[in-house]
Image 1 (tube, rainbow, N blue to C red):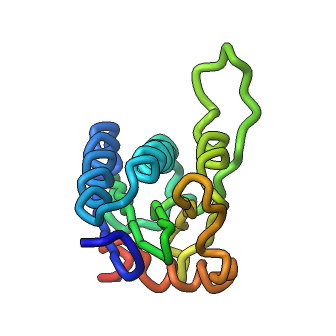
Image 2: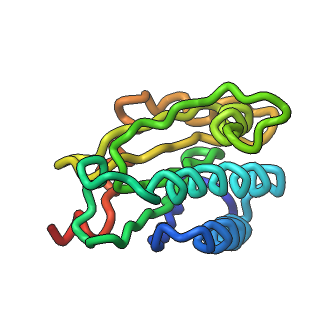
Length: 175
């Protein structure tokens, strides 16, 4: 199987700290199965780990008005992987409507570097709210090293439409 256009994968998990480990393993297994270049796999695993960690951390203790899930105290998130040309789109969907904010952190701080890492490893990244108020997705576009943004023909509105059309947690789908 040659790496290229048209591959897609999705994984939905509970918003638990242990879920991030499964997201990393899933991402690596899927991308290796798609014959993605090693450097792209490594970058994607780091990016998905940061985005999933944010989804889990920010779902904990979120007030009901900020969370759109109808599952009581159980919160979920999903990870989507898509190939686009020779690049990769990584998206994490969660039930929290707060936008991601890139923090300025010092070398001594324990956290706050996740989105800076995503920014450094991706050709571009962003977020979009899901239809019918079911949370948001945070996405990153990754390209093999030295190739720039290989999805440049995919405009930001088109990219967001593609991702939100396939988005939604199972709670949102069944609502």
